[in-house]
Image (cartoon, rainbow, N blue to C red; front, side):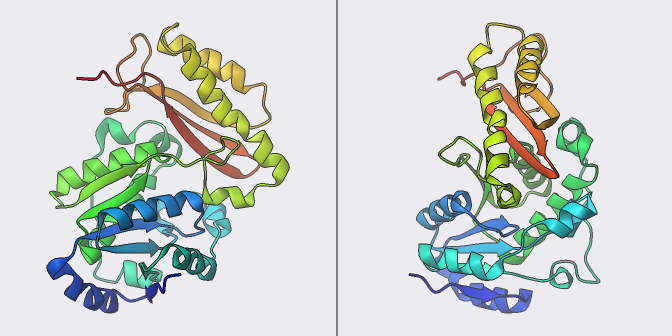
Amino acid sequence: MGDSQVFTSVKSLQKRLHTDRKNSSIGLFPTMGALHHGHIALVKQAMEENDVVVVSIFVNPTQFNNPDDLEKYPRMLEKDIELLNEVGDVIVFAPDVEAVYPDDFEKLNIDLGKLGETMEGEFRPGHFDGVMNVVKRFFDIVKPNRAYFGMKDYQQAAVIKHMVKETNDPVEVVVCDIVREETGLASSSRNVRLSEKQKEEALIISQTLNFLKSIAGKYLPIEACGKAKQFFKDGKLELEYLETIHPVTLKRLETKWVPGAHACIVAYSGEVRLLDNIQLIPFVEK
């Protein structure tokens, strides 16, 4: 059992990290809390690759374009800390909004171009501005050597990499594999809002992705995607989008497959928004 230290102010956290920074590597894992075994897998990887690990727990209001979603997002700090203590000693940064966005906060403005116009950028306007600003803020506070993000938020990971490149931030962005439930459902903090029946119904998401992967290469991307959308209709969820995309530029693939081609999906189970993705075409080994 660990004994995680919890800090709520920027000054106290930086004072704690000042000594560690001299001879230790620091890993940062930004989260919005409601931790589950998927998060813990990332924490363990960060602990293996760094001397000190900081887990931030902050429900960032600037990345929500739906006020109801922000209000209903699960908050369970005490349980999160208990779960982290089962893993070992980490540093928990759990600030309030004023600590993250003080009066003198200078907003980061980065043009994402096509990267921010599709999928999440289309359906959640302003979302990535909020994501980039809060992550950059944590980078500036913690000054980590490495920062960890989950592959489940595929587009977000691409946006963070772009931001780091644009700001010349000396941090390595580590993108970790999706962690799934035994059923195949992608682990998510939002899953706690699903009933057992809804969790079962939500399996249509991963089933659709696996179906799309099984036919990728046999049809043009636009055709395969269309067949997968038809497959999805056998379920009870509401589809927001399903796209076959280039793995780097995230541009929609229609007439030609490329190595590493990906599929991203978002669907609603009631009011709960669920996202997932899968690699359709393997990268060519050099």
